[in-house]
Length: 223
Image (cartoon, rainbow, N blue to C red; front, side, top):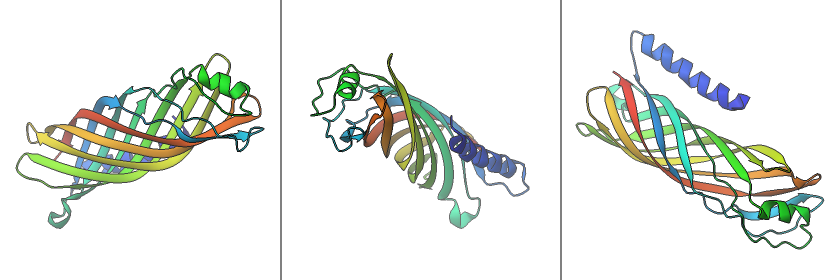
């Protein structure tokens, strides 16, 4: 994980630990999550470098397992219990499928991408969360800034990019005990990538990445 991602998560985790040990505690929680990611095609794909401006077909990406964790808190003040801050990290492998690609002047880059490639993404997000509490049930929605690291590799090349983006989520949490809860969540990540030397030195591609996902998880709330 890159330095900005580690810094973001470590900062909020440290703040949560301070809140746990403080005399007036907020409602701190930690959670694990796992599910499926269903990325849309990498679209608006264009060449960079020596193939600048060359238009590519959209790249078909594979569905993937998504897994990660969360840490956050809701404010303790009675008038603000509905509002919280959360950091999350989740990873997946939306591989580029082997496919037919056409692009005039794309040359070796077209051949390399058409053969398919291994993709790994790590998304770190800082979310603002709004919840509604009704007995042991809590529906919630959230929105935040994301930082997405993506690495594309094959036998002939390995390239990576770090990009800011948007993270949206909505879910339903049910408490089994006062502290232990299970949840289901739909999330959506949006960003753009630019990979240099993708298949041939001096040539690269850029495109828009959007990825819905459905996850389930277990959370522990320190109350």
